Image 1 (cartoon, rainbow, N blue to C red):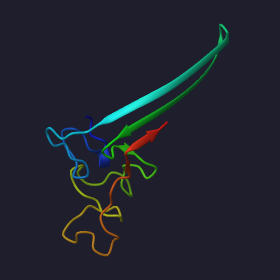
Image 2 (tube, rainbow, N blue to C red):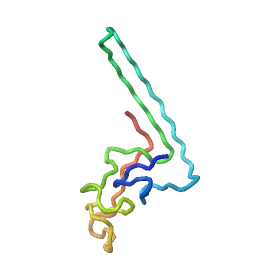
Image 3 (cartoon, one colour):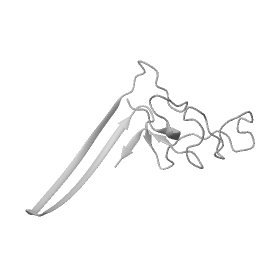
Image 4 (tube, rainbow, N blue to C red):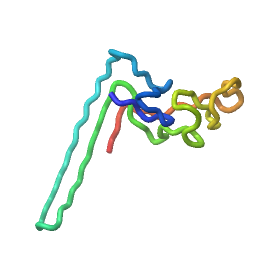
Length: 108
């Protein structure tokens, strides 16, 4: 399974927001519907719908996976809701720790 790019994370850096534990079970499935209509050799109308589901929140929701003020600090660090990297203040008075908007369903 691929790691979602939360705060610029890669497979090498990892992220505290999404575990990559060995043997961790995840069940995902998807389905797709594709319709094409070609009335002439040079004209094609095409429509497509996709639905994906996971038992673990995995896909990006409307809030996205980029923290406030963009990717800040190292990808393996937690970020405050103000956009600053968690330091000694631990986000006190800044609205707490930011979390990505991950969803268990994706509809395209």
